[in-house]
Length: 217
Figure 1: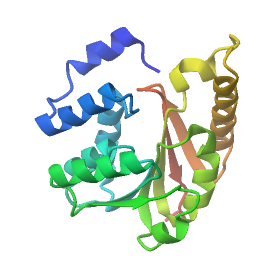
Figure 2: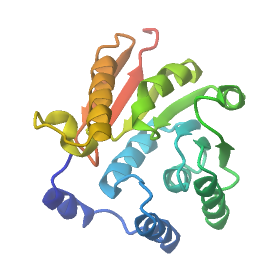
Figure 3: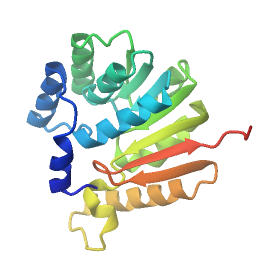
Figure 4: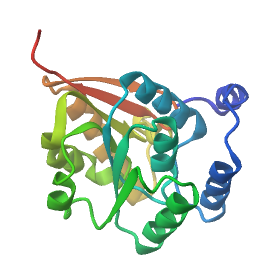
């Protein structure tokens, strides 16, 4: 997790976003809808430009911000994204149509734990991006990893959870305390998997990048 001062410093070097993207960012802020932090998503987009995925699965569309950013950065990629909240799903469709990315993005309405068969129709995926209910990260990973290509990437956002996973100070709120515990266990489980190579970067709210080990050439 980057200090606010450092984040503000880095933001001045980020390329200017177009007005449609800024509109989505403003809407998210005004309606308290969590979207990726600017520094975090710019890093992820740079990684994706290097990896050049053709098929991406996003678990957690919210209002379509990340999917739209990925579509604009990767014009040859197709993205499947899942959203369970009706209002956010409809807002995502609105912004996807408005930004002209509907040919690249397919939004599936429903809980990610219940729509596997619908998603599997579009597999395999080169990248899976997990950015939904934090307490379910491990279940999402285990459920959808069979749809990942060899040497594919699974990217997980918010794995440092405002730095709370790294502090020993007690968290008073019971729900937050339980969530912190689940994210810690997820990170440990992720790092411990021998079939993936994982690195956790302290960028944005913490991003885990896990590469599926393929057969050696």
